[in-house]
Length: 451
Image (cartoon, helix red, strand yellow):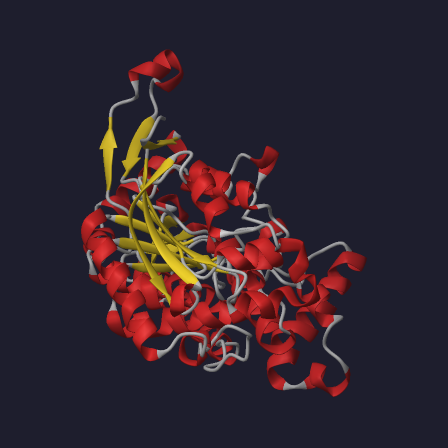
């Protein structure tokens, strides 16, 4: 409702919700930032009689949420551990986490936030943890396919809310590999039982459960959670990544050390001028400049298409604890709107519009011009659509070795492209308030303010 996040709860869910809201888990989770700040409200007057008799919540709006189809594998892994942690903690308070999906969780300021508070139900007993198989489909199997076969986990969730089915994954597992302990337990046998259940007309995957909680049932469920934790460790993303840009910031030989210091100095000064509280770093790589922005007091979304580079950033930030959230994004093909009628989750461009004080686009422009064949005017229009007050962008001339390298034999296509043309386009809706040449004038940094 406008900029407010409201939720209406029907009468059937009120008892479970009130038990959860009065629990130590909810209080401690809010203090830890694990749950969004939440409070009860009266029915909105704007809805009139439609809202009468219902129970209403309001949630604190997150700065810029990052969804499962924009996560690196480490984020999916941490979201999975968060889900298991909450399932265990809920049991201590007579509650049960009744579903296990990455879409319960959003990432903000580098940390997972569990947003679906109605996922907690009164513990009613039962011999299984209800979302056991769902957890495997939405966490374990996507991480397995990413680790073993290089299928990026974020792509799974662009069109699959419920993750991967064991029968699908089984087709990728060859020969004796299907009989290894992990594959046998998580893929081969579930796929076989699923096929058998379809033929016989009943499910062998849902054993009978009792209606009353007991110490024995709790022991069985805790054992199941430990088993899932073990499966999760088996598919933990690798420590090292061999992607093209994973170590770009360590090996970028197109800057001398002095030029690199000059660039750092200009970016630092620009951050001081802007005093930005929210920054979008497009082409962040491993976060060299995202960290500068975060240390200057900004909340940063570090966007890049190279997951290896973002993995490095995420793991370094696990130590530094800066408010930086990695996001898998190819700005030339940004995340679309997804869900029913494309209305459940807005596109990246719609979410980003007006949500950032400053956009960084350093050493990206030439890639869009050459690799993506995007005209300069269209790139500038995209930046204008983001509607940030400030823009820090790096111009790279045709004389630059990197430009020549990626253009190759097509360099002649860009012979009319020059700095004067760039200035003309950028100054349609921006004013240049600071600039600095580096790399013997082959590159130039521009700090621009929206006119």
